[in-house]
Length: 433
Image (cartoon, rainbow, N blue to C red; front, side):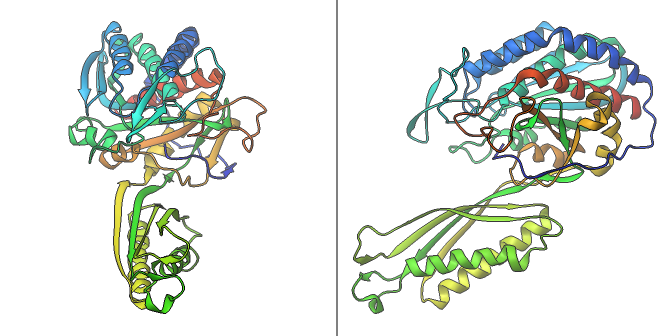
């Protein structure tokens, strides 16, 4: 996940009027089984945390997953989208196919936590030596879904449908491939026989026992922005001889900020245009020939993305032309917005309430981080939620955030994670026979 957590807002719970039938009677068995394997799930998570692997390199993690699924009698396919693992559990009765997803990859981050299971792995990333760390909680996602597989396999004969367990590589992206992760899994057909898909993300700044959810757009689309402004080089003492790409770049940066203040209806959804780096010049008295800018764009929904892209093009090109400069502009679409299907979200709200308690549900504002779970949701209806991973009584303002060396997860929420995903499966099957 590309940075998490916007503001949280308590919201009244709207419960669907439909009555859960048949499969809801499996909830007590789910609770008992999930509680009984909690220590096992924690042990899996700690092992995976100690040996994290970067995107498309998750071979040790994938083997651990595949071996576990096979031990449960689940049909396993390996090397999906490079290193992914897909398990299929066919229930004893006919019904829909429900997919559950966990992402497997770590990040090029050197861990600072002093833990008995602190990461010991290093790697070369984009030509640089780095530590590797599960600094976003994907180790927790894998362990929880391995636990869900064990829970549901124990009641296989009573399941009214099929469960597809998707263990996905490269959610954080890779620098050496045009397509990876969920997008490549979709291309390889993993969603073709699926009726609905569910996923969760642990959150280090939401208290254990809480679940965050939202209907509609919940996470942003993410795009990479690259701008090269080309001018005319000159001596810094004679700026009138130049076409100054530094001044032009500064005007472009300020102009881009008007997209958010004057073009986007922020009462509906937020948007972000951030310039993250500026490279230009080599000496204090030389106006350079060119300046390169790179940044990120975050939007919610296809229409808003189209609008923001249009305004970026207009502003960048016209400001450059007004200064006598030329410009190369690249906007690379990465992940679309993560959008929870409104009907499915409403249908599964009773499952969330049953698993966590209505008082522990938090209705989220849109989160400007991004998730490639969105590619699965583009194929079939899906719901993506956030699972609390901060110790009780913790302060979200001081708790280390995702993608940082001090990122830490309280493991006390793993049973709730298993319960809610398992409830999603059996309740969806009960209502969609």
